[in-house]
Length: 70
Image (cartoon, rainbow, N blue to C red; front, side, top):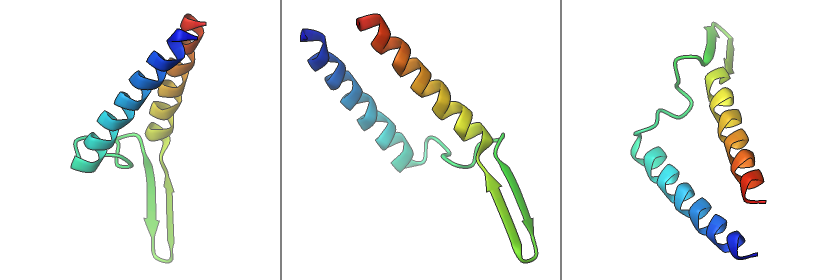
């Protein structure tokens, strides 16, 4: 149970760091090279493929770290 506090503090620090980088525009959120955009007259399609892959990898890494502390 001691590790839960440490995990929460590290997770909070990571969220603050990610928030600052997104707010300052360091990470081009939603405009990555692998994102698919189709814009035609009367139709706009946007699928953030690269963004989805990065989010999936981040969550997988978080689950892996949580399993290591279990």
